[in-house]
Length: 319
Image 1 (cartoon, rainbow, N blue to C red):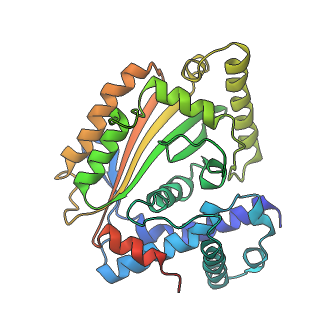
Image 2: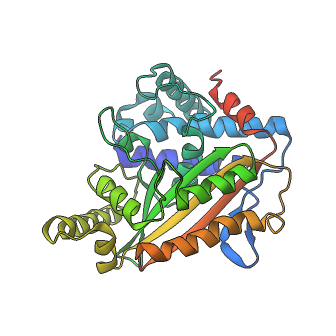
């Protein structure tokens, strides 16, 4: 089976069987549609099962290089949703046991939880294919600048591209979520702010030199993206132009996504408005200093009934 066919098969499965497990009941702020919330209104035990299923069944697609998936016989040979579900969980369990692929770390600080759900949100929920995820971002000796967790991309207006820089958090409460995303924007004593020209240039130098793992069913879109990346790199290499200036010269948009899952007992988006605004207002202030001409922003908050640690511990248990 060609990799495109298998990816299409997996994408259809995720849309039909996993999307509704977490990404339901979308609400947007009445005065800012860039701020949204999803809330799963089920009992705690069911919520735990839903998060575990989505995490463990998407794990293979998140960790594995997408080209390698094309040789995974259990996924190829699965003909029903039940068979594909079992194959995904079994293959994920193998990866987890071979910790050299993804080493076990402290659950409290492990970034995979927020990043995987963020990847799913972009790739499956919004159908905005991820350009660079774990499989192509990490390497044993490769420099990997801290910051942007997921790099997505989409083709707009037939032949233009929008890059998506997404930050992901899976934390204990809405205060931690809002504060952590705010700190990503402005920086801390040990980390440069991610919405600064210095950081964005540094990150783009890194990202534009990676071999990307795109999940597209439309080969024409892949060619548009490859062509656009070549145009950017040609300008950077031959004209000695910084990435931000290359993006401006080519009128390429960057959308900044701020994604967070956290424990909370208030699911009224209007009553949580100030936590969205803390991130949105700082972004609107900081983005001006970057010199980027074409940009957008989205904030995605997902409150849970279970605590973040309960959910993470549940997702770690491969039955």
